[in-house]
Length: 392
Image (cartoon, rainbow, N blue to C red; front, side, top):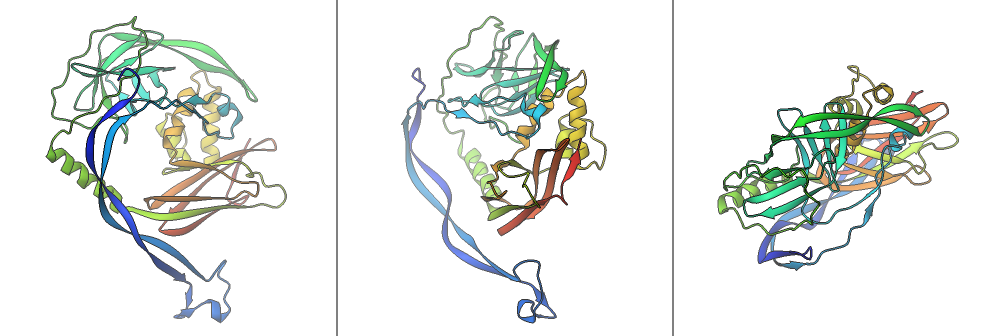
């Protein structure tokens, strides 16, 4: 609607799960078939631990989705990496309310679009630029209008999850020219790319497929002005699609467990992690940087991986795209307290997670990338000098 509000379909059924109780799980260290504690053994911690795991049952509730008013945007703090030359290139931006695009899209000409809440990152060769965009509802379907300074262009949102455009655009970016401490100097760099059909290239993208016809590419409009987002409600696309979505949701939900992660640190003297941020990812930092185009040697540790990023930042190519892409790999982030501790609680997939942190140190930085196999219940991750790597 013109005032930024959205209107729902009315009464709907919401399918989910509720906690019906808890199961107590006790883990005991056993030696020769008997508990280790009473035998006087030291278990490098408690010889017996207990945790409560919630029990879930299906639940369906009926709710009314009516008119929803526009909510003013709030500023969002961008998590800091602890790397001076990286943090100097990141800024905080306010959240944008309304219908937004999510994920990475790539066309055959090499132009890549990485949609975020407030803007879209355009990658064309070595040129990278961040531009605002709006999503409009037109008679033929949704259209994403990218307000690129080198030539704005529209993209129609097709039912097969592709974005369809035409023409060409110039991406006016900048490369890192020099770095002195936290001072980063840039040099302008521009390249031209065709605007064609973009396919989804990430695990999370915006639109699910529907049975509607694929709209034609909208007419080019390089001089278009920014317009307001007009969110609308979509009708259901059929019982078969709903049932398939329910089955997919059930498969994801069944793999999730409730667990806590107790983050701690142990240092002699001043704790370098006090008040610092820890980032949680599903891949090691070396793999993340490789996927972002950084040349990281095979089997490189976290220190060598970050050194490779630093080298890229000093090169004519620059590291802007890689640095901006790191955030999409973060599962979550948390700030440690003054004693270097924090607790994370989640209901999500168990498995291997990587706890990444980098903090300034005398003459360089300390880097951690700790792999932890998280399971239901309580888990512990401990940071120390022994499991850190130092870079200069």
